[in-house]
Amino acid sequence: MKKIIIAIDGPAGSGKSTTAKIVAEKLGYIYIDTGAMYRAVTLEWLRSGLDMNDENLNKMMDNLSIDLKQSEWGQRTFLNHEDVSSEIRLPDVTKYVSPISAYSYVREKLVEQQRLMGKNGGVVMDGRDIGTVVFPQAELKIYLVASISARVQRRLKESIAKGINVSEYEVKGQIVDRDDYDSSRSNSPLRKADDATEIDTSDLTIEQQSNLIIDLATKIINK
Image (cartoon, rainbow, N blue to C red; front, side, top):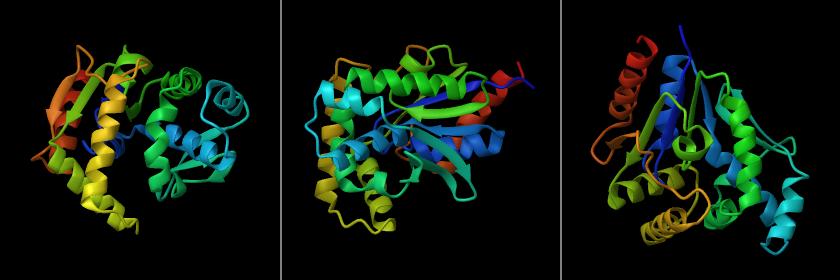
């Protein structure tokens, strides 16, 4: 049975990561959370105390390692061999991940690594530029969207579950700011690939949206 590349893109809170994990699990594929990689870089920058500029970030990128490893608790993110899976979800990382992600060398290095991870297929990769930049040749491209209100409630629920104290107002502000930043940046902006299938997840359950993608993937795999 052939193994394809499934690219899932979309804005924050559209359900990319949760859906991608389920799709990968049901198909027996490897799940790759590219957002976690950018968050790891952001965490390293926050820890460094350095100014945010090309010189500092370029040097930093040449001296760090990021690994994604599967475990019984799901995918874990390692920064310089340290498990930072919880730390990369903290509010400060969320606040700065978009501007850090906009730097050319940061994206260049991570895209190179992501392409190596998925080159043999059998992967579900989610992010903001998977179908447009990382794997424009992906056999299945999905673009998830959802209303602001639905996305805010999802992120709020996630934060509460992780013990992060944040208000609905703050979450909405973060999402709106990130949408603006990601879609307007000059380097790999968030956009729907021309041949991507758009799915509005506002009124769908995770199971429903996952099944829609699995059905599309199965048709391609069995073609």
